[in-house]
Structure formats: structure tokens, C-alpha cells
Image (tube, rainbow, N blue to C red; front, side, top):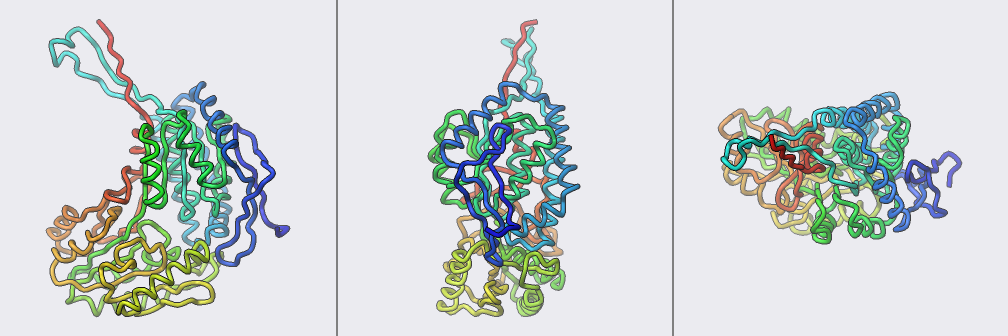
Length: 475
């Protein structure tokens, strides 16, 4: 291990724990060792659940939870550059995008603090029926219980924030399993939370094999909820195995965009190039499929290819870089295989489709059949298809031709067409004149079909991590 590499322990019951085994983390760009983290297994996970359960026996009042969340947001602001460089080093995310992620994590904690302060039940109109006359009734929101949180590599700070901050706002203690490829961002956040005077046991971080840690989170009855962001195959199996738990899933997408001929094509090309290839396409809502009206097809594609070719491919720690590496060589080889499959099936590679050093250049594919994997599955790489259509109904049908349903978009100046698309696109979110990669952390974000079963936003997540308790008083 390099002398400058970091070494981190697990956080369990307020203590930094070493296990004698280690998970080594390497830069997706250089292959150099970023550092190593103590490796957890089933025993450490059970200890973390013990700590979370014990913490909840002494509930934190709402104002205290809110104050802690606000302090964490402030500390993220003070250590913003450190957080961004941690993300860039371990995830290979370009520094400019990593800085945005660090800022968004601050917002997530701030919005969660607001929800902690206003969490309340409602009055029940008992005298609306004869049976209720003379009685007063209301509900209070009670914390659901210990939350098991499983986060992915692609947003190693802000998606962890979206797991932890709403859980704490709801009054739930957390056992977090971050992705083994990117644990340092989560551990930095855990460090900031201890500095913010979060009592021990309220947040516990365990890093290690998904099979061991996930099995414990699923099987232990004290874990009342699991919040998971990742692949659909894994997520739905978790839900099947834990029918009595509240399982919140935020999964994948094959993100479509419809471009009508009345759109500002220069603006569209600029937005779509940035949102198709930023972080090498490793976002659930990276633009993957562009459907362009035939009258605008040649012009939009020309502009889009030019914008894609102008993106800087290289070292994620260089502030000028737009497109960095995929998370590992396995992911890179899979994406190259899908590109080659499309080429062999008669699709045209307009640009990219090859390596620049060890990185895949932004790739634009035309004439890709709808049953090709680049068209109907989630590529999770710097690959985007472009297809011409004749009518809006045809474009909507093509956009809906996938098992996913997270976010979609349409560019048009015609308000009737915009609302028609918003109504007919089978997705959890539809953006108008904005790339569907857009996400603000206060908006309800989540999908339908195979893309999940929840809406991630502090206000929504807090409600899902609490339950109503009815109180009836005889007057």
C-alpha cells in the first residue's frame, strides 16, 4: 500500500473498529491504491444492529435531530473540497461533477433538517360519525425502527446522504453498507456526523461483502426498513426476501429524450451531450436514448456529435476533465462488448466506440435496433443512441419500450405536446426542456416498472420511515 494511501476503520456504536481484514480501494483511473478500509462481515453487522437498536431506546427529540443535521451540512461546506476530491479519487468522478455532488449533499442534509422540525401527524374528525361523537383523536408519527441502508458507487456521498439524513430526521438509527469500491466518502460523512455530536449508535458504517452484510440486514427482524439503490436484479430479490420489511428501491433506467423540431437544437445538443456522458454515463438517469423528429434529425445529430467530441476525456482529478473512467475494467469491457454487438447488428457508430488510453470515448450510435442492449437495457457507460421518428405518438411508444421507468424528457415549445408527453410517458418523472438527468434533492425522485417502488426526497423518505400511531381520547 502506498505511503500516502488512507486507512479507515468501521464506525460501530460510536467507536472506530478494526477487524484485522481489509478492503483495498483502487483508483478507477490510475489503478493506484487510494487506501484500505477495515472489512466487516456478519458479526460486525450484527454488532452494528445491536448499537442502532440500543441508540433508539433513548430517542432524540426532533429539535436535536434537526440541529445535528444542520451542523453536518455546515461541516460539509467547510470540508467541501476534501469531500469532492475523495469522491473523485475513489469513484473516478470528474472533479467538477464531484464538487456538485458535495454541494448537493449539503442540501440533502439541510432539507432533512427541515423535515425533522415539521414532522407531525394529523387531527381525525371524530364527530363526523355518530360513533366518534365526544371523542378527540389524532395521529403521531413514530420512527419505524432500525434502517438498513445499501448505497452504490456512483454517488458515494450524496446517495449516502439520501439514506442517512431522512432516517435520522425520522428518528431512525442506521446501519449503512456503502459500496466497497467507494467507502471513503461514506466514512468521511460518518466522521462529520460524530463531530456534529450525533450520539453513538445512531449511524454505523460497515464495509464488506454484500452477501454477508446484506443477508444479516434482511434476516434480522430488528431491521424494520431497507433502503437500497443499485441494480434491479439485486433490489427486487431483496424485496422478495424481506416481505415484512419496508423495502425502498431506487433502481436503474434506460433514459429516453424526445426532441421535437421546434426545439432550440443548439441548447438541446449542449444539454444532452453533458448529461449523456458526464461521469462516463454512470448515473441511473444519464441520457441514453435520443429520439429526434425526422425534420430535425440531421441538424441535431450533427450538433450533438460535435459537442460529444469536444468533451475532455482524462484524469478525474484534473478540473478540466468531463469524462473519466468506468468504475472498473469489468464495467469497461462490458460496455465495449455492447457497442460491438450494436456494430455487428448494423448500427452506425457516429463517434467514439473505442478507447482513449484506458477510457471509453463518448459514443454515439445511430440506427440501433430497439431490441439491442444499448437500446433497451441500462448501459451505465458513455454510450447514447440517436433515432429518427415521424410522429410524437411514435416517439412516446419508442421511449416507453423498456422495462424501466425512472425519468424521461421532451424538448418542445408546444405546451400541448409537452403535456401529452408528460401524461403518456411511463416514468416516475418527466422533464420538459431540460435533460432528464436533472435532479434537485428536494424533488420526489423515483421510478415505476423495474426502476423501483419509492420516491427519494427527504420529505417523502421521512414519511416512509415513520408510521402513524392513533391516539383517541374520551372527552
